[in-house]
Amino acid sequence: MIGSKIKAKLLPGLIRKAKKANARPLVSGSGRIGLIVDAKDLEKKSGLLKIHDLAGYPKKDCKLVICGSRKEIVDVNFPVILDPSEISIGGKFESEDIRNFIATEFDFLICNFSESCLHGMLLAASSKVSVKIGNSPDEFGVFDLEIEAENPDVFQQETLKYIEIFKKNR
Image 1 (cartoon, rainbow, N blue to C red):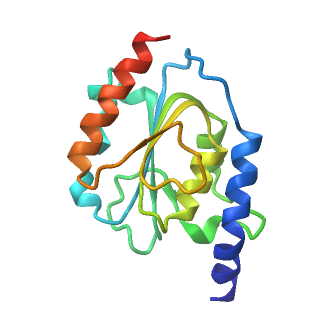
Image 2: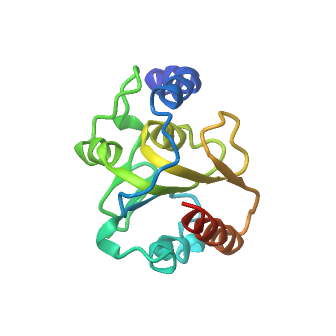
């Protein structure tokens, strides 16, 4: 599809622009945590989907976004899906759920997606978050903390360790 190829070329610039526009000081107070995960190998990330409990956030204060095509995500238990086809060529999110996610302020945003998941990176860059934690590599410098761990369980353990450090130092 021509539109998706053009979007893929434009997304890096849109990510950098969103990062600049949404730079935030490291402050606390929202009492919420966000999680952006791609649908690739989702079954291996089941523990990561419950990280809010381990970090001390009730489920009601956690928002989860799964990145992937709605056609490929068969589990209807995921309320918010970021489908790449629902991003305009100018980088605007068409989904009301995604726009609500962006409007929500979070203490922490935890991102675990593949390097090719540019739509997830655009969402992370567009989000209002005190601390963005994500997996390596982060070629756009969106994350405040980049964790190098291929295993989702190791990523989860490292993320929790740093969340506790950030909480103590606020």
